Structure formats: structure tokens, C-alpha cells
Length: 189
Image (cartoon, rainbow, N blue to C red; front, side, top):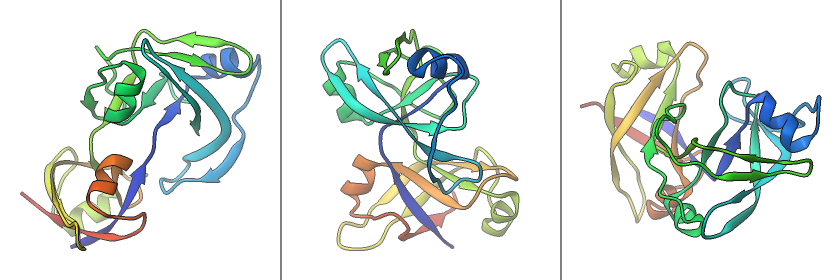
């Protein structure tokens, strides 16, 4: 059973309060381009991440606004910033390190919210039934090509509002030699 894969670069999800602090009172995120998941989009807005060891400039904001601000980086980004970000599921930010966000209108000092997103598959409930998997199940995924690998510990995220796609960060995708939209094979445990 095959599905598409996508590589996710560092990005930031912002709460409405943090959007206004960083970009000005009443600011609404500016749509840049749609993402694969319904209702999700890349924004024109970018912020700088400032850690104890270094700064990463121009990190893309993704919309729409979220209840809590979350920063998703790679392990290498963590070294550059001086932050030991844990590998966690998106949205699970309890006990994670923070970072300073710098925008054109202000700064936000996060006390938590920095993660390395765990590899996962978004799929609709119909896709889950077709693949014979359930929400929160852990599966394996095989890539193809000269650098093919089997990704273990892949979280299934099944939801009526999701579109079928596996997400890995840029480092994982590059190591496996995969490109956005290429097909991979799900191996149910």
C-alpha cells in the first residue's frame, strides 16, 4: 500500500496573541500558499528564532492561528540554536524547551514549545480503513531508490479532516533520498 511523502522544513505555528505581539495589534496572517492538509497554509510572515547559542533568521509561519505557539525544528537546528528539542508529536509541547521569537513589531519569549516533530502519516478515516490501520498506531514505512530505508516508529494520525501524506523532517528525507510527492510503502505492524 503506497502513499506520498513530504519533507517538512523548520516552521512556526503561532497563537493569535503571539501573532499580534510579533506583527502588530489586529494582525491577520497573510496566505502565501496552501499546504497539503486541508485548511493549512504557508504564510508570508517569517520570524527569527533566537536561542542561547545562535539565531536562525526568516523561519516561515504556518497558518491558521493555533491555540498554542509551537516551533518545529530539526536536530541540526537545535545544535545551531543551543536547544535540545525532544522528538514529539505535534501539539505535545509540555515540558519542552523554549526559544525567543523575533518579529517586525515585537518579541515573544517562549517558556516551552520547541520540538522536533516525530515522523507521522496524516490520513482520512477512509484511508485508515483501506490501509487497515487506526489512529495512533505505530507502523513502518519503506522508501525506494538508491538510499532506500525503512522508517520505524511512524505514527498514524487518522482524522476526517486529513489528506493522505507521510511527513518527515528535511534531515530524514534527505538521508533517505526522497523528494516531495514520491511514493513510499506503508508496512503495518
